[in-house]
Length: 596
Ligand SMILES: Nc1ncnc2c1ncn2[C@@H]1O[C@H](COP(=O)(O)OP(=O)(O)OP(=O)(O)O)[C@@H](O)[C@H]1O
Image (cartoon, rainbow, N blue to C red; front, side, top):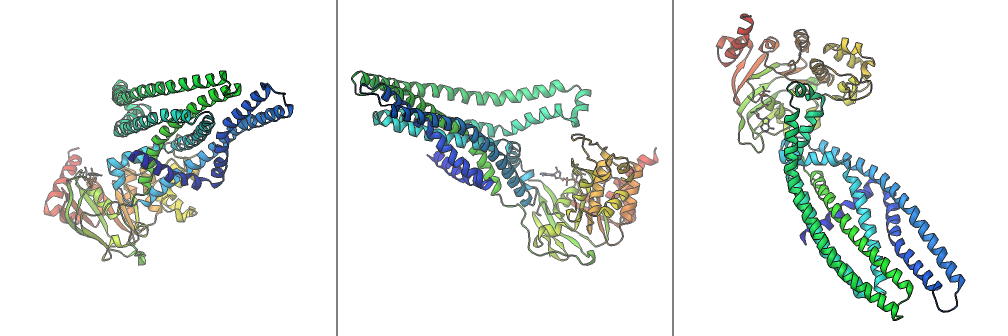
């Protein structure tokens, strides 16, 4: 009962989506589908009239025959043309719905300000399912909904025709179908839940095949000859999922055969009853046609109703995920204070900040406090996993501190309107994005309000050491940076990193955060980058995360993180003189050069 209730609720919730996607196509389909659904019963009714008029024992009335023939032709014609028309409008509606669904998913993603949902495996599974299936689920939604409506109407009109013989026959057919419907829904739900439970497994399967088919991994796959390893893993995971689903599918087939068998017994008896009626002159010869055909069509339509509605159920469960995602509240709430910095003046302060990732018991940052003043160039150093990138996620409000606050100019950063706050930050993430767009778009994307500033584009291109590379592009700034598209080109790892740096420069923000910006740069490019950063003058503040301790000569202050604590803080000279943890790390790297 609960299932039926949620089914109906979900269906009703889904209908407005059609209307939202296109009012015009909704109206057309709303007219075509029911009209087309009742045409079979009209065809039958006119056929019966024709047979009765021809086989009458009284005088044949030609005008009646002509009427039935014409009516039959018109209805058959409508039946024939409405099919293709329905398909056309279904197709158009599907296109609109796909765009609308995907757009609302993207809108929601933009509304969610933090990383919580994207880094939480439970939500991420759902988001993956939504993203991957958004391209074809709307097709099912439309095809199954219209199929369900039209088969319900055809079935009902056939049952109405059958009530002319005996209301109990219509009831028998209807009742024979209901248990089958309930079982089918149950099994469909079970199948979907099995699929959902297996969703992480399904993602693994997709990953294994993508390793074998993607450019990213193909070199290692060839060299280490790992094809068999991945194919075996794929097949093992597939067999596990398939075994679960197979059981449900077989159960579904067995139940269907039993219920169809029971239904057929009732139908057989009813047919014998009508044939007897014709022999006893209670019914006409036309009645045999109408009875046999309407039983067949009633059964077919009710069966198709069950099939469509159970398949729709599967899609509605997808829609349930969709509605759940669409109703998510952003993990990070924006404040209301509009931030505008005078002469880029700002101070950021971490006040006793502690942080634990959601669903993790590990304390990543433990009561840390430090200040970043305007114009300062600060480096954040520490061993792998010390919490450096986590600090960046907190500054950029991708997560909130578990305890303590982060202040900007003495005010908790959560009080600022988030987009305005983020505007003061230009960033190169450790895992920066490589957009399959043109070179120009790859840069301008950081400051879309400034897309016509080719002068600035030229400056950041030069400052990032990309001038020569862009000069070599066949299409200059308009060069597509991906081999996946026509006339596209591929960049090296270091070149991509320079593009990410240029993107951060183009943002022209007061606060520049660079997380391992020189990891892929050659010595000359790294030198140029550091020169540029030194030139940033007092108007820009810099937070540099790096493992290359030699790059720290240009910073004013170094914050050394160790296991979530600030172990040391000071200038390079101060830290080396104090011979503490930093000096130890520095010595480890310096020794390599000395012993060379
Ligand atoms: N989304 C997450 N959920 C749970 N734990 C996480 C998450 N992201 C990072 N961690 C953990 O937090 C710790 C700190 O990670 P972080 O990326 O801040 O380190 P880091 O100092 O930047 O390291 P590296 O020098 O290797 O880049 C690590 O132990 C890491 O496993």
